[in-house]
Length: 419
Image 1 (tube, rainbow, N blue to C red):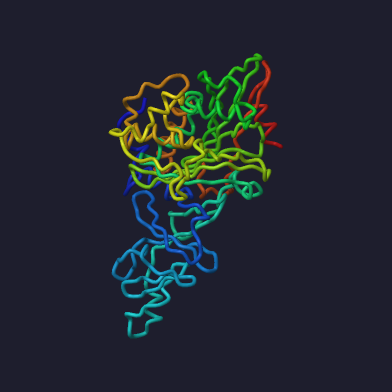
Image 2: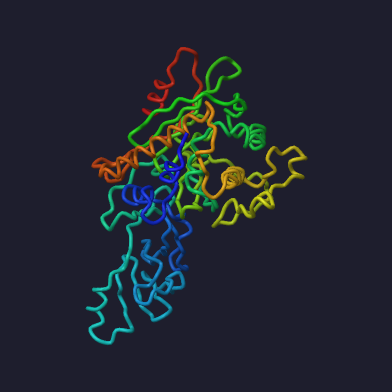
């Protein structure tokens, strides 16, 4: 069981909180879909770890991410004009280029160019990988970006979304690591997917709780959910957790070069962004519905699930839909079910009040890894998956497979990862 003090250490990211410091100093953080940053269009507000930033794409294709406020009189640069490769503040006309340099100061009458070079703009390195824009908040000298399974060749065949989740970031991460909820919470979606034959493994015994085996890894955690099949074999579902902000899970068709990705951006202590998508090495490998259950639902490109409301309106739950046979009453998207349940736990879940069961092994293991990582970071060491390690960190893909009695699932994982 997690104590209240441990829960504070795990969840708080604002200000000088240990978790926030560890994330800033060791990990690249996703902040936007690359497709949402368009050259010439308005800057976008970005909030990460309780701090406010602004991002825009210059005419040269580069992305700049700065402190939201103009270094002159602190007006918000979300109001700025985008001009070529820079942003011009509408208050006094100062212009900052995409590299974070002040290039025009109309209010400075004497030696303006020299004055401009002395103005410090708080800006951060940005990389575009896997269809996402990531920022390094640990200083101007950015380390190498890790190798992720949804980057590279499969990136061209990916589909991505972003959703606003009004709850603490760790609730989102733990929901992804927890495979046991799928057969219950998502059962209506699974039944429909099986009917359409989108998924070769949907018919396996997903309704019952899995047994779990977990292993620590240089990047975080490998969690294996094991379920018996109707023919006496075992279905293994391997989730990879690249701590603290990225997970990949199997998509359901037992293909080693595709999967579902989840990347989390802690906005502050009470909110986070979820970047979710599918990736495949085949152009036709992605599902048609992309997680949209109700064909009449048109997702907001800036908030895919569009979860609104609170406990007083049951977060928009449709009880009529439930009476018609839908298990949860949230019939728009698969993610809606996840985010509503996570939000219903409260802004920040009090884990000291939980009663964990045998199927919560992976969640408990992930918490322990995160707590140990905080201790390591506070002692001056590098936590698992730190981008500051000398060698580029590699995250293997998620896997799923069926194996016979007497076979070690670890051998199967090694064989499939070698493909």
